[in-house]
Image 1 (cartoon, rainbow, N blue to C red):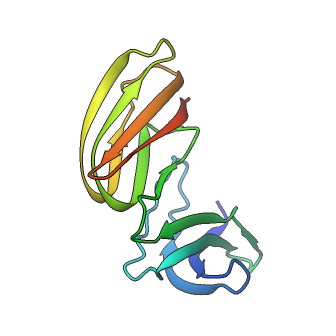
Image 2: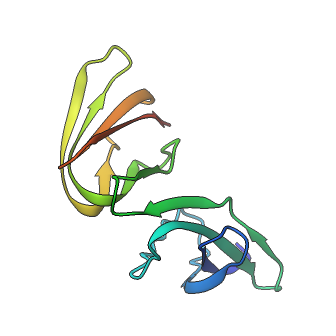
Length: 149
């Protein structure tokens, strides 16, 4: 409730970070979702973190996340995991085409049509539990275990 804003920081070496944008905190009693897209990522590895600033000037950093914008491979990041608000985000260095969600028994329980490098999946109708998400691009596929809470 004391949050002021979130500064989005990027680094290409994981050591020196610079601010590439900010998002104002909503400060209400509801779950809040925020988003920010880096429109000019550096080629190769990019490291991202949030600097969470409070109104009293106190701050803390989020965990660092790494995304590879290397055009030689399909690097895919799925977040947040575990899923807590019914939304799952996919960032890919290649255009993602589709995704399949499998339950713990290996049954395909949901199919998604994807478009581009940034996609949002609505998993709010899925029961809580552990799933396998398989994401397809034109050149490869990626599988990740996800937990829906």
